[in-house]
Length: 213
Image (cartoon, rainbow, N blue to C red; front, side):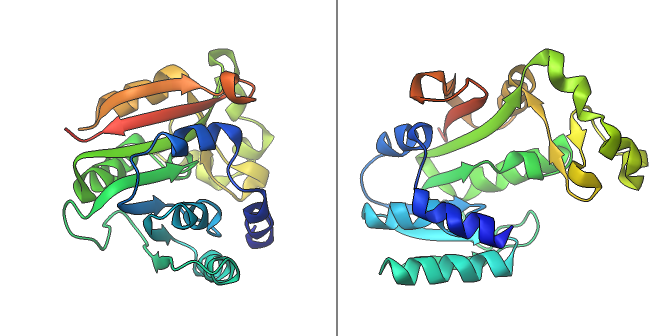
């Protein structure tokens, strides 16, 4: 996983991600939530933003530090484990959270995490997100042989769309409607909720812009 995400860094943002990044206000402070190996953090730093990247994985953060040093960019990387972010209220002008929500189990915890992103974002600030979605008719396929072979499938907190890839990982599958409904129950205002079909994608990645009023 670390090698995979580190190798991805050289590819830079996808066309859909660049569409969201290019529409951001110029300058300011950015929190890159779930920064991984620093693929997006370093690009933002190269564009002149003051960037803080957070992730739960110290090996990924080590890879991110190495990538930022190679690119000669000053990015602050912090390990943040759990829902409570180690930042003061309204600290950041911008929050970036690409491909993040599907790795947080239960809507309750996802909402709590989004509330934390809302808390550390300045009033009038922007949060951009991407998230993979599946067509409505695919959602039952989340319960495959790996799902039923995992002891975690018996947990009481398991929700429709939860998957256990290869029997050891975790990811939540969203339909577009379910994702929009979850975001609509947060304190954010949804300004953009579109798919990536106009940006070289297959229409399964949602491009999201949220605002803190």
